Length: 456
Image 1 (spheres, helix red, strand yellow):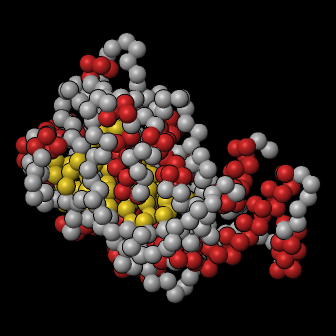
Image 2 (cartoon, rainbow, N blue to C red):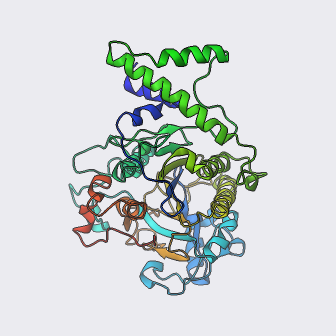
């Protein structure tokens, strides 16, 4: 078995946990005041965020609709967002007011409560980039722009590292930096299968199923399970056999701990998700249930990774997005309420990522094509909400923000800055940021701030 196949198999059995226990040796005391969790929601396929956040005032909406054509959401259907107390004209870039896609209406109360912020036009960059620099021969850009797998990896690893391709993700490196390991389970938990985002230099994730799913090693009967557990506790004279035993022991221990949590019929947060059956709702429900029982997990810092697929909308975009956004908006709003009911509103922050945005100009099949910079949601009580960050792109084909003439926005906020803002809130110190975000200096040295500012 090669390493990739081994990790894939281990993750499906919940055995990745053991690898982290071999190298992490310190823990935080669990307390409500000290506890923090970062929840990343990856929207796979390339979310067309041009229809997630839409200009609402008459003039800017007319410009949007004139380019969007058949993909334009009728203005009367939008959910208008109340303007921030102080409007940053540069950030809003000529737009007087914005609205949410109607299927995301459940998020509007969070905005009004100051628990939702919107990041404009973020994406992978090697360094600050303008339209003129794009045309400069040899100018350094992210590898394979508009490629799903490459841009997913760059979002999950923080783009271009000075030393080359990253073999770890920023979720794992954040856990490394704050020394979040050595709890009962690993500090990084994925509900969306294995991903480079979850791999640190020392940290390995625990892959668990959504609530109601089975987790761990399965055996025909309890007697056999006991025998295998006893065998796993024995050590041989080879390192491989010892590690195999440790992995099995950890898998059994984690399944015994986590299964009762994700299948807890008396959970106080589970009923809040009643009627929601989408994958993203079940994943976030499971995260809420795990956070509810955080004391049993023995960690005061946790990173969760969840995902929603289906955003590669080359066709039938209006119908597909309406369904996906309806699931996403309701699940996020319910999750925020669930965390609030636990008294942890300011202790848990949720943020979205996606491969890339999509062209503002529609294609010929009622969809849109791969693009670059896009808009994102950041949610939680510690968020400096009811505010926009970054800079909204001009909706002009071939304009200063467009890489082509189809509405592919050059990011004005880098993934590195986006991640550094979240990591700093999580507890990563300024001196540790270079290990979490290796390319951040390419922006700070050019005068871009390390923090975008959306976290308190």
